[in-house]
Length: 177
Image (cartoon, rainbow, N blue to C red; front, top):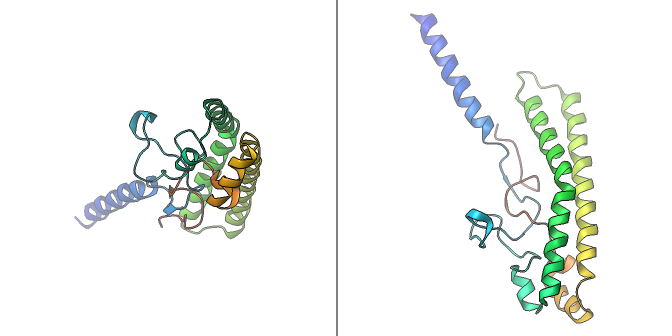
């Protein structure tokens, strides 16, 4: 009877641990405020991921009176950026999963964890560099007057990544164990 109870409890523990691990990282800042879209991708949403974006629907863009051509160029550049960085983002997610797996071990290996964290940090640095270059290219689309107005939105002129507050890798992101 005791063996049966232990087996049932072990199965229940494994099942709930699997669900907890599937939840992923804790809530963090992600890649920064960006334009989020609701179901279907056709309308701005009101939840995590929404904020000032650099697409035609970004709140700061409306204040800059962008032309249709500027909006089109920015959208095209944004799509190109996401396509270009997709492999990097996928690799980063894979490395984070590997890191999470290392942490989940009964006896976590400090050296392996630190090595994997360095890999994740290197990928994150690459992503940030690409994002900075992308924002600088986006600025070139703006007229000098629009660039001056954009400075009111803070560093980068409000042109930040396209993700947003929520599940992410930025400050506050931590495993759920």
